Length: 410
Image (cartoon, rainbow, N blue to C red; front, side):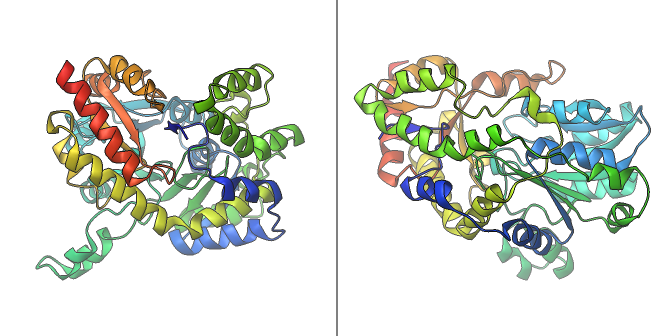
């Protein structure tokens, strides 16, 4: 079968069958309990991860002129979610070929803009940011810290083995946890091609007890915000059939039938759209999605191990000139949602790989903040390679071989 970065990349036949027939009436409560135990907070389930971020910001009820600082290299949905909460955005530039902003960049931004009240970290593609220093800054400046886990469920902030090092055991224990163990709020996305892929879905976990109490109050705006709308039946039906339809598209690509099938389904509006503008409304998450999310959480550790193996194959075999040394050092900590390479003439490589039925053209990050030159440069040169369960070790070796051959021809 052809290899894709997206288009239902996480789905195999077992997943397709589950998506059609799974039915767990108590899945919503079970998922909430799992998240509350895992991330030590109060959980609310939303139809989209972007909705969880909007909800977190609305609960804060900050002054209207408040600013939210985010990664300059991110998805448009993050900008939109903040706008929906009626706040402004401050984009923070990357540190060279890293994919996250540094603590120094945050300090400089705070010096220039005193209206920053919230900091959102995303551990881009699963690679951990410098959480220890960023958390310290947020505490000193009394900023709200939100951990966006859209890319990084299962990411670790430091090696568990460091717990026995000479540094403080308490500090080691604190930073050795998974992403989601630090912020005042944690947001998750269970959308297509994410670490926890339930076709759609998201969650907000409120870890800061101050804001948990405001939600539990019998009066006030916070309680009203949790009265999420009900998702319409047609959208639920599209989502239920999305795994089956995308599986068929990918299966038929080698027979030259997948592309026309994809075209027809898109034009008939039968495929669920990831960036549907109408889905920024705050919807609750129906039970079916919760059932899928629970099955994905149960498989998380094997998935993480698989992605780590695939990422390491890329790191060991690709020409080092297209790799980021700082990112490669953190493969063992990362969820490795994708494996990034950096090169000029990206489009040429995409077309070259496409001839061998390797489809990696999903570029979702071109529209970045012009005030962030490093982020702009990364957005023009990065190419993400697949690490999902449908990419075997043999496939990864084939991809590296093809890329290295292409590089020699340049």
